[in-house]
Length: 154
Image (tube, rainbow, N blue to C red; front, side, top):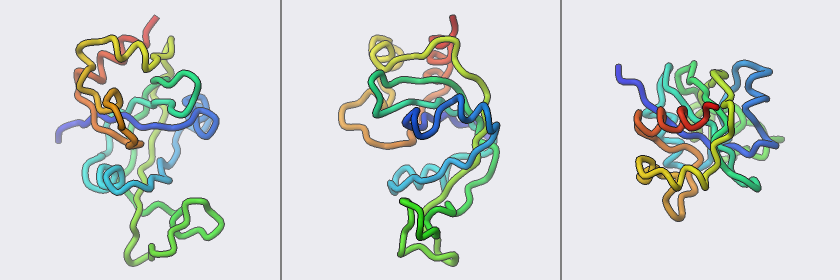
């Protein structure tokens, strides 16, 4: 089985690499975009490596690495009427949204800001660097993953 590489967005005040380090494992849910949902449901697999990217913050960028540790499962928040992610059209028999569990792997020695990533020629094809990208989950290449990993070292 081929290992995939991903970039997943979060706001640091909602869920940070430090939060993940404290809980060790967490469901990655709340995704409400069909293309991102399809990545979770159809392509993301146990063992895949993920860059945790902070968006909607003063300095967006990558903070660390997570690993996918579960098969996709129906996102429980879609059934919870008190959740902001509740979906009245979702049913237990026909869920619309999916999640996976991720676990902490490493926090970068130094945060890798988006502005620095944009200067790297070998990262120019990353979806996160394209104008208008709004997806919370995007595939990245093995080379892009390891280049950003190297950028996060002291």
